[in-house]
Image 1: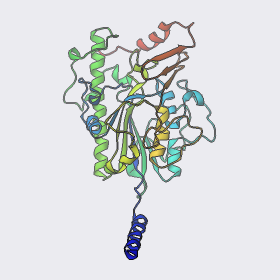
Image 2: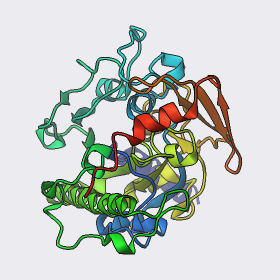
Image 3: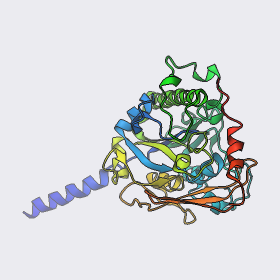
Image 4: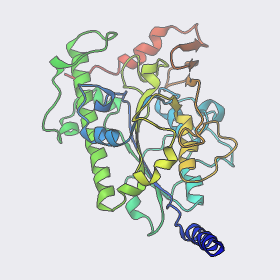
Length: 369
């Protein structure tokens, strides 16, 4: 018995010593501009998004994901730092704010731990991105990394931006074999049923399909490089549609975003808190950076206000906070809090007429014939 017991102990010790740790995952972010949860995996029958839907079918669809801000720069500074834009002073659109010298954004923290970081190519943080990525530009790609390094890569696609959605350029949709019919589009109840709105929304769905094609291309590139099974993929948008009541507004239509997460089988332990493919827990952009750090095995910095939402140490949120401030030449200041059911918006400039902000948006739109 002593010999048998000793043999078992030796086997256990040998197995634990020879067990190979899992390689750190590659992380890929694929982001679109100015679109709401209008993908097939969200039950939108008007959407044509087969590549995103395939990822969703193998992964997770977040039904309560929010950008914290309804316009790009504040949303993106929140996303890349894990801090609310109102804490950094980056809440006004198109401003360049000096941020703390010791502020390290997500790619810098990843790079310090051996990741190769690339951004292709929008930054728009309201502070300088210079020197914060290994590669930042329209040729940045994980394929440029040295052999053996894991990567954190971001690809931003502007094809769905309001500038494309609210004007018609045949080049934008030349890759499509079939387009959405304006007559068949189902309009939200708060939009007038006019030819212009129908045309805009049909065109928006066409552009979403073009974005879906880009998602498919990146997934195919991962498979060609034998990296698909080693890469965790985030697919999301930066805020709601570039239409009235969406972009620039603190309604849920402005800050609720689509978010699909694909996790290879070998990394499922890192998302052990997700028990179904449809995830209804609330997450905000402020949580993305600390969550990616946790996936990569990197400690979050104390100054971060976001929380990790994946794995055995995930932290659930009770509230989503939002903020709307100056957008281009329109001054405003309002804040919101959402508990999953009720949305409270506080306007700190009630003396300003609502119509000023609305007209600033509408007069630039509705130009599709």
